[in-house]
Image (tube, rainbow, N blue to C red; front, top):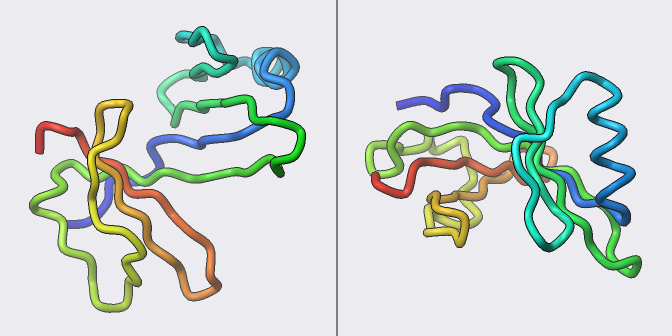
Amino acid sequence: MATEGIEAVFLTTHNWGKAAKFFQSLGYELEFSTNHNSGRLRNGDGPYVFIAEVPEDREPQTQIVLKVPDADAFHPDPAVEVVTPFEETHYGTKEMTVRDPDGRLWSLQAPAGN
């Protein structure tokens, strides 16, 4: 089984309001916001953008998330370095972290029910 492409882009920011406004000015619509300076925006049928505010002492980060339809059926090729196997998340999915040959970390996300 392979991934199904990019599901989302997770961003951290020092200012949730400014970051959300930036994406809204580029045509993204706010799907929902949380009560703790984070939320999800979407533009058409493409991947969603989830933005979360972090303290000033943390560097803003970008994480690309690849979609996996079934965590139990996914078995990465030996060329893929698994950093962490699929684990339940607090936001209702299962997530695996892998490292590419240049050292970048990628998130693979599957529905929690699988």
